[in-house]
Length: 124
Image (cartoon, rainbow, N blue to C red; front, side, top):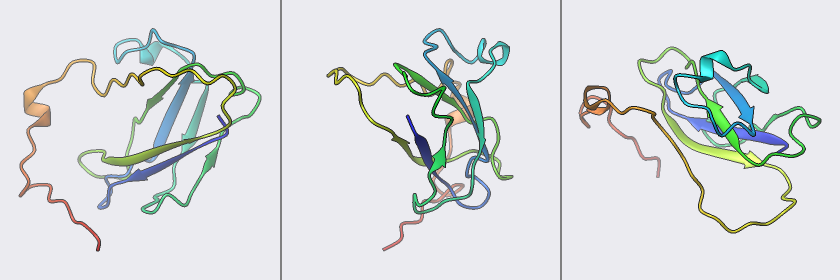
């Protein structure tokens, strides 16, 4: 892994920081606070995917799993992420499904957002 790109939401909903954890498949939302991240990045507000945030090459040379934690945003009520790009060079090509965990414990009241509260704006 050589870098990361994050396209976030507008209105302060874009993430402002990301904590990166490599090769830690045991992490969840209850244990992540006890573990030091491999690297923490300040993110720029990027609506087009033009900003590639470089990571420390020495620490990210042999990555088998990558966990991302977005602890803060630019001031909005919620953090909205539209796209995450992971940049780098593959060393061993293994065909397997990508496993993603967005929430450890989902709460219905946290995820019930009506479209009229948070409308989506498409740019033509």
